[in-house]
Amino acid sequence: MLKIAYHPIYNHPLPKGHRFPMEKYELLKLQLIYEGTATEENFFEPELLQNHKPILAVHDAEYFYDLLNITLNHQAALKIGFLLSERLIAREICIVSGTLKATEYALKHGIAMNIAGGTHHAYSTHGEGFCMLNDQAIAAKHLLHEQIAKQILIVDLDVHQGNGTAEIFQNESRVFTFSMHAKNNYPFQKEQSDLDIELDDNTNDHTYLEILKTTLPQLITEHQPDFIFYQCGVDIIASDKLGKLGLSIAGCKARDRFVLETCKTHAIPVMCSMGGGYAPEIKTIIEAHSNTYRIAQELYF
View 1 (cartoon, rainbow, N blue to C red):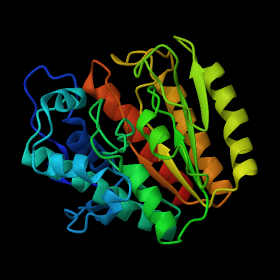
View 2: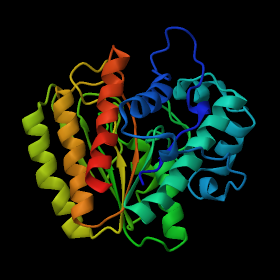
View 3: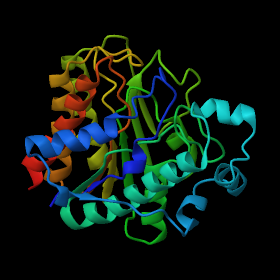
View 4: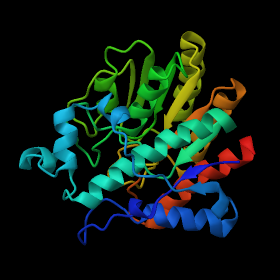
């Protein structure tokens, strides 16, 4: 069964006019149930982590406790882009918990998802770009620490570079970080992933998919990962307010199909965090994200 992390806390209240479409998390769950792609049984509610060791294995203790106690300095809080509150930090910890649990389900069923997460702009020492704790990095480090995985591949196909993920694993040979993103987009000072592919503005479906289909199988052959984390942001579509690429919704769906088919063909468990999506119409965001779940159900169950 496809297991999906979801908690009502994911839909965090934001000031009117905020550019982050927080309501997408609740709407996505409702859409998946409405159309029959998922039932309530597919969803699990992550618990608020009481043991912070997995987080502290990745994030600097001073930074984490400043978040927890809402004592982060003003400049550092501004970079995150949300007004800090106890509820917001609880939400972030729930997202991490959801990804950790989804990783267990992926090992059992081949694939699992978190409706939120993909917080790849969170560095070991600070947060930025709507990201505070790097959920997939925390889960990857946990797999290594528990000796569940020996070699991990992070496939980050959000329109923005996974700069925090790159920094966290810059000296970790057991985690290969692959980011394919818009060249002329945030973050404007990029980190160095193990492999960065920078795409020109308005890159279309054909070009994007040709690059991906050449690259991903080669990475799997070369590095032989026994677990894959997939950051499947849908901000690569042409209408996205914060993206600069030119893909159609069909192209984004073809991307997801190829990644998940490749994972399944190679029998590599994959955990998916949704990442970004900022199209002007919420229905576009929901449709693009829903495709990821539709394909997962079709291929695996």
